[in-house]
Amino acid sequence: MSSPVNPEYADGTAPELVSRLRVIEGQPLSTRAAAYAGIHEELTKRLESVPAASSAATADEPA
Image 1 (cartoon, rainbow, N blue to C red):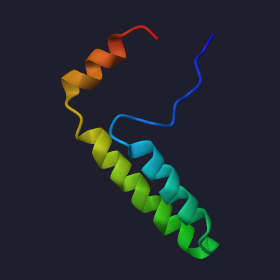
Image 2 (cartoon, rainbow, N blue to C red):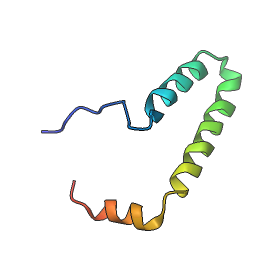
Image 3 (tube, rainbow, N blue to C red):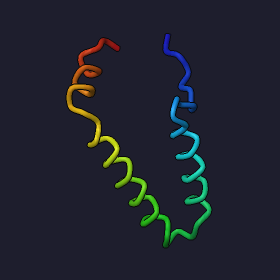
C-alpha cells in the first residue's frame, strides 16, 4: 500500500512552490507561460546542482 504524499518537506520548499503556483494560476493566461517557465528553470537548476553521487545512491535504493 502506498503512503499519502506529504506536501511538507524539511526545507519548506513544497509549500512555497504551491503558493507560487496558486499566484500564477490567478494571472491572465498570457502571462502564465512565462511564470511557469521561470519556475521550470529554477527547479531544473536545483536538480542539476544535486551532486551526482547523491542522486545515484537514491536511484539504486529499492522503492
